[in-house]
Length: 196
Image 1: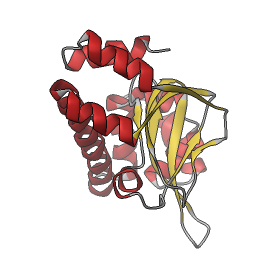
Image 2: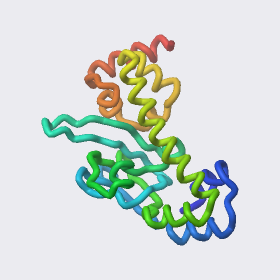
Image 3: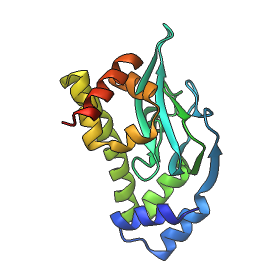
């Protein structure tokens, strides 16, 4: 259950035996079935998660009924999951996190993560780096969506984030880009026929 997490952490920081034992003690295995929610809108996010297997989507349900796709989590690509504002402020999440495939995760309570960050300097660096990377990715995708045409944003995803296009259903990719399913289908066929 912890092998992928260990590999990921060891790429970033020296991992002492003491810290590794603590991580294994604090981490709890969580299974979320396809189309089930890891976090619903209004719930408080009390955990940070490591995604061992599967994929999830982050959604915003507008009061007008429109569903906005904010991002994706895929094992081996974007493996650390939380709802940052809810997690750090203790308020209800404005977003939902839903499984697109059966998922296996490791949950760490906020209390345990913050305690390990205080006790282990190297983990503090890792914890803050994960948080900074998550915020950077969120802002980067937002900036790319706003600065590129829909077609150029699709090409950007194809070149820089192929796992999204391989693992995420087209209807969610279309919503992420901000286009109709039909438009995405046509553009995808044309681009795949004549690669850029």
